Length: 88
Image (tube, rainbow, N blue to C red; front, top):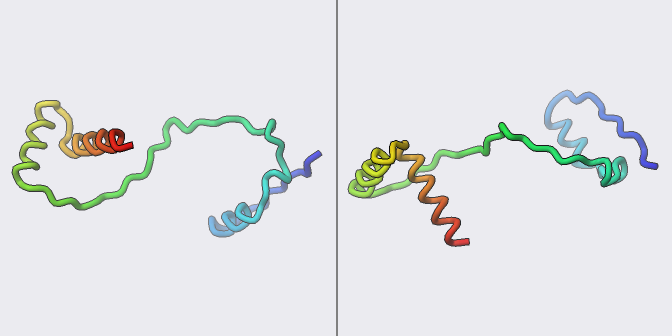
Protein backbone atom coordinates (compact mmCIF):
# COMPACT_ATOMS: atom_id res chain seq x y z
CA UNK A 1 0.00 0.00 0.00
CA UNK A 2 1.32 3.40 -0.97
CA UNK A 3 1.48 6.25 1.51
CA UNK A 4 -0.92 9.18 1.25
CA UNK A 5 0.45 12.27 -0.46
CA UNK A 6 -0.04 15.50 1.46
CA UNK A 7 0.37 18.52 -0.80
CA UNK A 8 1.18 21.70 1.15
CA UNK A 9 0.06 25.21 0.30
CA UNK A 10 2.71 27.03 -1.68
CA UNK A 11 3.71 30.68 -1.34
CA UNK A 12 4.89 30.93 -4.94
CA UNK A 13 5.62 28.94 -8.06
CA UNK A 14 9.30 28.49 -7.19
CA UNK A 15 8.39 26.86 -3.88
CA UNK A 16 5.93 24.56 -5.64
CA UNK A 17 8.53 23.62 -8.26
CA UNK A 18 11.01 22.81 -5.50
CA UNK A 19 8.48 20.52 -3.79
CA UNK A 20 7.57 18.55 -6.93
CA UNK A 21 11.17 18.30 -8.19
CA UNK A 22 12.27 16.41 -5.07
CA UNK A 23 9.29 14.07 -4.99
CA UNK A 24 9.15 10.56 -6.46
CA UNK A 25 5.49 10.01 -7.33
CA UNK A 26 6.11 6.26 -7.54
CA UNK A 27 6.20 6.33 -3.73
CA UNK A 28 2.60 7.56 -3.69
CA UNK A 29 0.86 6.19 -6.78
CA UNK A 30 0.57 2.93 -8.72
CA UNK A 31 0.47 2.95 -12.52
CA UNK A 32 -3.19 1.83 -12.38
CA UNK A 33 -4.04 5.03 -10.44
CA UNK A 34 -3.11 7.24 -13.40
CA UNK A 35 -5.67 8.29 -15.98
CA UNK A 36 -5.02 9.83 -19.38
CA UNK A 37 -5.95 13.49 -19.79
CA UNK A 38 -6.11 15.84 -22.72
CA UNK A 39 -5.89 19.60 -22.94
CA UNK A 40 -7.80 20.47 -26.12
CA UNK A 41 -7.61 24.23 -25.62
CA UNK A 42 -3.90 24.31 -24.83
CA UNK A 43 -2.04 26.20 -27.52
CA UNK A 44 1.66 25.66 -28.09
CA UNK A 45 3.77 28.65 -27.24
CA UNK A 46 5.19 30.59 -30.12
CA UNK A 47 8.11 32.94 -30.40
CA UNK A 48 8.58 35.86 -32.75
CA UNK A 49 11.62 35.58 -34.99
CA UNK A 50 13.21 37.82 -37.56
CA UNK A 51 14.05 36.51 -41.02
CA UNK A 52 15.39 38.32 -44.07
CA UNK A 53 13.73 37.56 -47.39
CA UNK A 54 14.25 39.14 -50.77
CA UNK A 55 11.60 41.65 -51.80
CA UNK A 56 10.65 39.43 -54.74
CA UNK A 57 10.16 36.39 -52.49
CA UNK A 58 8.06 38.37 -50.03
CA UNK A 59 5.89 39.80 -52.83
CA UNK A 60 5.36 36.29 -54.26
CA UNK A 61 4.49 34.92 -50.80
CA UNK A 62 1.95 37.69 -50.26
CA UNK A 63 0.45 37.06 -53.71
CA UNK A 64 0.09 33.34 -53.01
CA UNK A 65 -1.39 34.02 -49.58
CA UNK A 66 -3.87 36.46 -51.10
CA UNK A 67 -4.90 33.87 -53.72
CA UNK A 68 -5.40 31.29 -50.96
CA UNK A 69 -7.11 33.88 -48.72
CA UNK A 70 -4.79 33.23 -45.77
CA UNK A 71 -2.43 35.60 -43.94
CA UNK A 72 1.04 35.49 -45.50
CA UNK A 73 2.72 34.69 -42.18
CA UNK A 74 0.43 31.67 -41.76
CA UNK A 75 1.44 30.55 -45.25
CA UNK A 76 5.13 30.87 -44.34
CA UNK A 77 4.55 28.72 -41.24
CA UNK A 78 2.73 26.15 -43.38
CA UNK A 79 5.63 26.00 -45.85
CA UNK A 80 8.15 25.60 -43.02
CA UNK A 81 6.07 22.81 -41.45
CA UNK A 82 5.87 21.00 -44.81
CA UNK A 83 9.61 21.29 -45.27
CA UNK A 84 10.26 19.95 -41.78
CA UNK A 85 7.97 16.97 -42.29
CA UNK A 86 9.75 16.09 -45.56
CA UNK A 87 13.14 16.33 -43.86
CA UNK A 88 12.11 13.90 -41.11
